[in-house]
Image 1 (cartoon, helix red, strand yellow):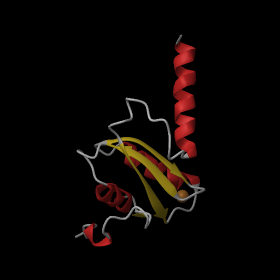
Image 2 (tube, rainbow, N blue to C red):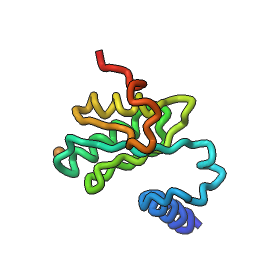
Image 3 (cartoon, rainbow, N blue to C red):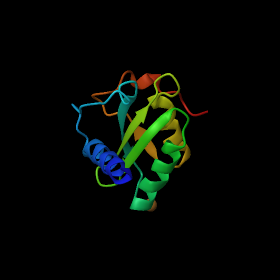
Image 4 (cartoon, protein in one colour):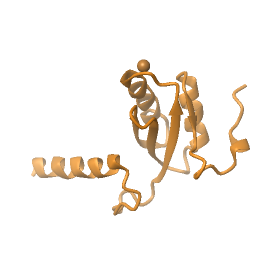
Length: 115
Ligand SMILES: [Cu+2]
């Protein structure tokens, strides 16, 4: 039984990593919001891992996957607890730049200036 659970979890994660936008979101994921951030400033996989670690530990973020290859961070979060702008700030604090892809950008000016 344990193996079945792990297999299911792995399959779900794999489907999510591939970035299937019209995913068959289960009930558990229904309330989660998703956003993809474009990253810049990364120069190796270690950078991607670092950013991913920071995002995963950001309050309200339930899942984050940073791809060094595509320079993107796929994030699942609770909109009531965290905003994409806050995630961008987290990435900035780590020394990198993040932005909402223009298609998703709400208002570029809504990004709070850092000090
Ligand atoms: Cu690096």
